[in-house]
Amino acid sequence: MTKPLNFKQELTCVFGQPVAENPTQCMIEAAYKACGLEWRYLTIEVAPENLESAVEGLRAMGFRGANLTIPHKVEVIQYLDGISDAAAMMGAVNCIVRQGDHLLGDNTDGKGFVQSLKEVTDPQGKKIVMFGAGGAARAIGVETALAGAAEIMIVNRSAERGEALVRLLNEKTEVRTRFELWDGNYTLADDVDVVINATSIGLYPDVDAVFPLDFSSLKSNMIVSDVIPNPPETHLLREAAKIGCPTLDGLGMLVNQGVIGFQLWTGVDPDPKVMRAALEEVFGV
Image (cartoon, rainbow, N blue to C red; front, side):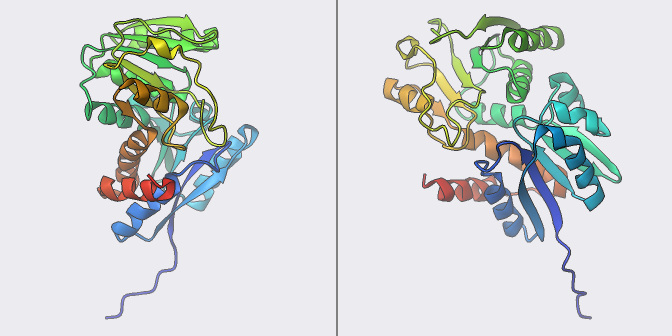
């Protein structure tokens, strides 16, 4: 019997502003192809004032899932039918999954980051300095705390947002968390184990942005990571590598969180090597 023709593709996407620099599409569509899935992943610019309408568009057009990036990870929650326990703890959503008629929010950022970090070191017992207090920082803070980090220092230019994240981590996890205002070049303490940039400093097209850090305070035993996937090698990572620090680029976190989202949407396990290779081809790594 001839297989019936079906020209309807299942749809997924990412919402953000700006979003043109986001490389998730090439990674996810490579995985769809490798898995033999007739699915598509769209990169869609959505202004904050249009977020509610955009989510309703997902609902109306039967999208199977979506990702959220800057600046929508917190604001999107009010437009969803429910969120996971992890997303509720973080107060941020980066992944929407359709279940029947419901759009449910989850957060895969932190899990993806911790998986990348564990390829270099176990977060257990480590002292962490994290720059930023937005959606990515919330996710990474919670997941590194749950992974057993000993202490997290939140460094942010907005005291209000930074202190809010400190309260969240102190209330919801067992990790010791403190806040320092980011005013000028930040100086790291000698006993820091892991340095994390969870801000957009250095994100394309602002690739020449100088990271406000006293690089003389970096030690070669400190692991330095950046959540920015584009470009994979930021000013922070270049300077850290000169000092001999092990570095983690944003592609690893992007792939790992993408694998989790892919599984939630499709029920299929993608090959992370296919996804990483697609990103490396795009960036000429």
